[in-house]
Image (cartoon, rainbow over all chains, first blue to last red; front, side, top):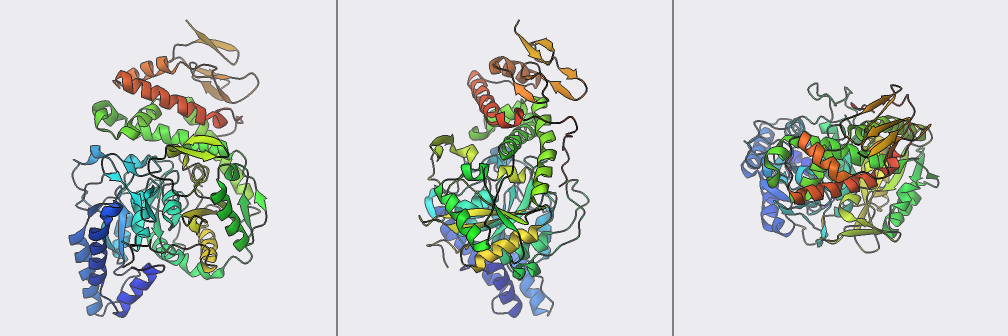
Length: 465
Length: 103
C-alpha cells in the first residue's frame, strides 16, 4: 500500500484481477511483521483468518461472482472489537485471561460481508481511558511520522497502523476524541459519525452514553466507502438509531459550493497553540469560511463530558476494582476509582446540561452547515512530555489532548478529522463538524480540502512498500 | 460536627443525607450547596475529600491502600477543578437530563 486512495484502488484492482486478494493480505502481514516493532501498533495478528478471507475473495472472483465493495482490502480493528477466536482486551491486562470472543462485533461482520480482510487487532489506552496510547501492559504505540512522538489515543494503534501503511483502513472508537486525536497526531483522516449512527454491539464499552465507533483511512473517499458499508440499524443496540443507510460516497464531488462554513472561536481558539490556529486559518481560507462563530459554554461542555466519562467509566469497572484493583493499569486505576465515587448530583447536572447544550448547537446549525475547529491543541508531543503549554498556561498533557474534541462528541455531532500539515512538518487535523446525521457535509468539506491538496495523509516516510 | 448551608437549610457534613428542594434540585450536602436564588450546583468552599473518600469507598466495598486513597483524593480534586465551569452554570428547572441520548 503506497498512498492515498488505497481502499477504493485496491478493491478495484482485486475486482479487475490486477492483483489477488491473497497477495494483498500477504503484503500487509509482511509489512506488519517487518516494521511494527518500530511503532507497536498491533497487539494480535490474525494471519490464518486473513489468508482464509483473502482466498475466499479470490475464489469468488474465479467463479465469476460479483465482488463486494471492499473485496480484498486489508484492515485492522482496535482491540476492543470482538473478533471471533481472539480475546477482547480493551487495552487491559485484566481481560487477558478472558475466553476468546465467540463471534465478531457487528461492524466486523459487516466488513467481512463487504469483502474486507482482517489483519489483526490494534493497541489502545487501557479501557479506552486516555489520549496517548501509553499502555503499561501492551507498550506505547509510537507515531510513524516520528517515533519519538505520541500517536495519540485512545485509538493510537488505529491511527499509527494506517499512517504506516500496514492496512488500508482501521476501525476505532471515539468517546471523547479517540478517533480524532490519533487522526490529528498521526496524520490520517478519521470519521466520528453521529452518536447512534453505527451499532456498537460486540465492542467493549467505555462510557455508554458517549461511545461512538468509526473508521480511519488515508483518503476521504476511502473513509466514505468504508462508512457506507458500516451503516445500518441494529435492533439489539439500544443506542443505535433506526435510520436508513444514507450513502455519502456519491456526495463527495458536490464540493462545498453553497455550504455555509464558519470557524469556531472563543474556547476553541483559546485552547489551541499557534500551529493549531494556523491549520484552522488555512482550512478556513480554502473553504471560504470568513466568519468566526461562538459556541457558548464549550468549557462547561468539556467539563460535563469529563464528568460523565469519569462517572460512567468508573462505575463500569467497579466490580473489578473491588476484587482486583492491583491488576489495573496504574495510569487509569485511580481515575476509575475516583470516577466511581463522584456525587450523583454532579452527574445529573452534567446530563441536564447536555440536552441544553445540544439545543445551543442546533441553533448554530440554522446559520451554518459546517464548523471548523482544531482537533488537538498541538501537533504530536514527544513521548513522556508531562505538560502542555497554551498561552503561557501549563496544563497536564494526558487529560488535555482532548480539550477540543470533548465538547463536540459530548453532544454526538458528526465530525471528520482532516490532517493538515504544520510548518514543522508534523500533521495536525481540523475537525469539520456538522449537525446530527449530516456526515455527508463533514466529508464534503474534508474532500474539498483534500482536492485543494491542503489535507492529505500519505504513508509515513520509511514505511512505504 | 461541621455543617454546610444548602438553600435555606443547614446540613451536617454526614455524607449520606441528601435534601430535595422544591422538587427541582437536590443537593449532596457534603459536596454542594445551593446559592440563594440560583439554580446551580456550587461546590462547597472546602470539600474534605479525605473524609468523603473514606466514607464512600467503604460504602462501595472498595479497600484502598493509603497510597491509593491519596491518589484518589488527588484525582477528585482535579475533577473538581475541571468541572467548575459546569457546576457553576445555572440551569433552568425545565432542563431535563439526557441519560439516553438521541441527537
